[in-house]
Image 1: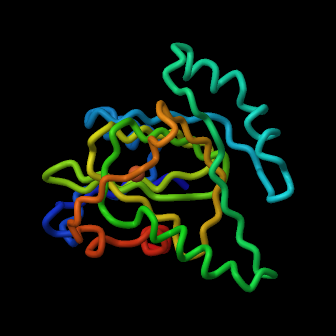
Image 2: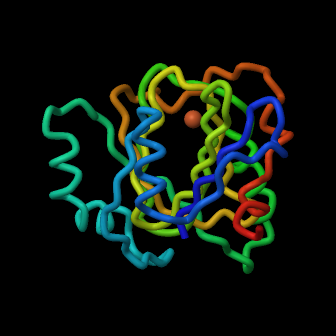
Image 3: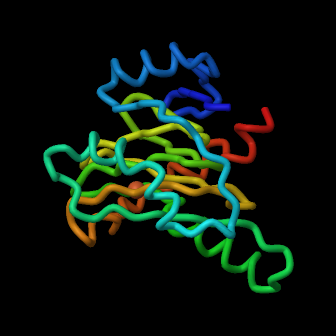
Length: 190
Ligand SMILES: [Fe+2]
């Protein structure tokens, strides 16, 4: 279930809002200038090709990209594979990649086809955590300090929209703020 969790940026225990109400989530994000939308989710298993998944969303992708702003659109996907002894290490490495506060030169636009991930937006004086699930589209504005947690057992399929081929590269702030906030696993267990 999509979840919005807002706390003071200087005190993670000072929780100002914790809600799964879709209308409230959309309204709270809108007042902060964060694009958030809902598209139909798809049940996606590891055996379905990425091209097939992208094809299913061709019309919606076309609408979102009507002005051709996004020149690179692809799929990020991780599916747990307990038969692969390398999986835990790969999952951990993938998780660590964007688990620290960073920002990008362009908007970070993601549509979750299935699975789950959490964006933490550092919007002073708050940290706004959005646990996205299948069907959620979110855009982190360019320059916004944020981090992303895919959890200890990453399981998601997300369409990524980039203006530049290297738009995913993060400029890390060095601020350890992320370490003080509840993880994705903790947020969904709460
Ligand atoms: Fe990012």
